[in-house]
Length: 577
Image (cartoon, helix red, strand yellow):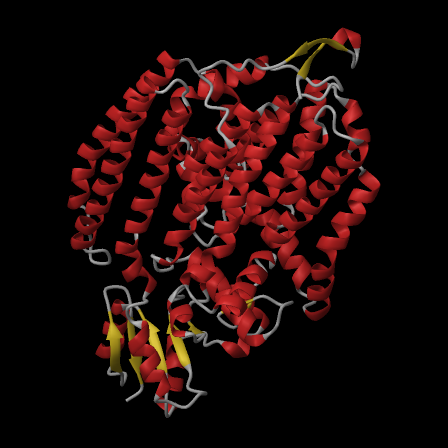
């Protein structure tokens, strides 16, 4: 559907019809069969490695263990972590992971399945949206950009909340865009807006108030910039709010009924104090997320500035709606919002990725052959430089992460860069031989998909050790020989992954870590001091404990009776003799 140029002086009347150019060098059209095969190939690459890595602390182990406990206990209302109440986040992903465990068993790929699904469907959704809002070429470009962006690709393969949140926020954004497309019937526009409200509700159940705050602020800023007041009449506010509250409210009501302390902790402590104060100890400079985006969209940086210029030149719809402005405001506001926060993590600005993919994807079909050739050559040279720099990986290492692990990981890095370099050369060859740029663009995108996949899989070099999975069989065997009610203590440590692999929660000792709220609500479930734990340990007939090697050495010096079950560089698991 062609866009129409918009004259501010003429209100919403179109001044002229405009269709984005579509030259012979465009990476589109791609035939339906070829497109289907590409989606299948991406699905194989995307989902195949899910079980090839161990879960790594802290997020992957935490959310997998929360889902395991929910599945085992059957309590789908009160989230618990290590047996303690855990109200830091809403339960949508925990529900999804628990259902996956129920359907497919408890394991690593099952713990990552929901995250991977949201990431994969996000690629398809951004492609469909680009096609409808701009044209087919832009849709294909947007999907290619998002699938090959290391930021989206890697976050889609780790069991964290931000991928699910980003997908539902993407669905919110894309539904809004699709509802405003020229030629959309009233019924279809209503359906898209209802989906927009439902997506916001699911984003609310993913991570809380930012699901409302961020889209709402973006909409206000967009309206002030574009003076598009008519958009508010098309939001379906009445029916939309009914849908939103019908989806988002029930869990909040039920969990508050069972846990009167919930609302204050969740909304005041976690939603506001977390953002406004540095108490979470996740500091970072204002430019923290600049480097995240530079690395996260590395394959497309050479086209980024031109993409923004191209996007700003695109016209409004005949209704006065400016989709590009909404995309740029979405990306800009979310970036600034988290940049000024006192709490920063790499994954926080992931909701920006689909908007950036749409902007870059809209420009990609307009890239000339000469520009594309320079793009490929520059990235081939970049990969050569990266390979040279990777030599120095072998110099890293410490007591917790021995140098041998870095040397092993370097092999995976070399393999990832080598495959990406070879595919970039293929892309250069296809650019010279093929009439269209589609094969070359696909080969280049595949280069970065494979780079992230191979390097990400190789990270299990570290994950095997940090997860504690190698210790789990010995611990499970020891617990199997003991009574079912044998206490399992976590002495001055919160291990985020070993409880999942052992299938057993632990009793916190001395340091509550991030479970401070839980132990204050149920103080009988923990041991506040080491001295009290020693007294309990000596009184217990049977007991098991995990601790750091330094704590173990200190307790041995105090002649606390312990027999080592198994140990590594990070943890020691002992039992009462």
